[in-house]
Amino acid sequence: MTPKPLILGSASERRRSILRGLGVLFEVLVPETPEVLEGAPADIASRNAAAKNEWCARHRPEHYILTADTVVCLDGRSYGKPADAAEAEQFLRTLSGRTHSVLTAVVLAPPRVSRRPPRSHIVESSVTFRHLDDPLIRRYVSEVMPLDRAGGYDINEKGDMIIERYTGSYTNIMGLPAETVLRWLKEEKLLP
Image 1 (cartoon, rainbow, N blue to C red):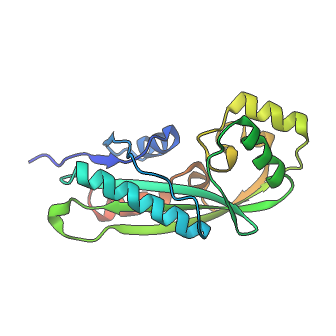
Image 2 (cartoon, rainbow, N blue to C red; image 1 turned 180 degrees about the vertical axis):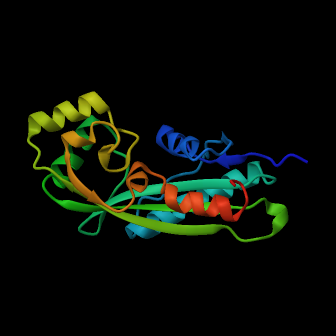
């Protein structure tokens, strides 16, 4: 019997690209869950990733389900996806010249018939922004249109315009920590 493909519960093209790069076969299912926006950053990411996973598992119980949620945080405040370009610009002004954390909660659930609990983990990276002036901020937002990205930016799309340096997992900053996911997929025998 051929195993059913992994389900990626995400609308993110960046997560799809990372998963394709790992060489795993998968299908996409976009969860219809409200986003948790209040609480500690790690709690927000964990609760959102778990809710997405649960929603997908109800709709595809025979599949492995992979979900994630990314939060940018600075001084205890969380920065999710900006509502519009003006808010994205404000996020970048706040992050300008400072180092912030990027937390991604990732959840991998086996098929429900296995009755095994999901795996979950939070990966943290840090990003230091260059000092950004308003013309550069406006240019970056207009060229990248980062409205579907936590913190209002994308390290993988013109990140060198705004980012001075980072530590930790690059793919975590993109929205899916490939190192963690790859390890899990190998342990679950979804990859050789």
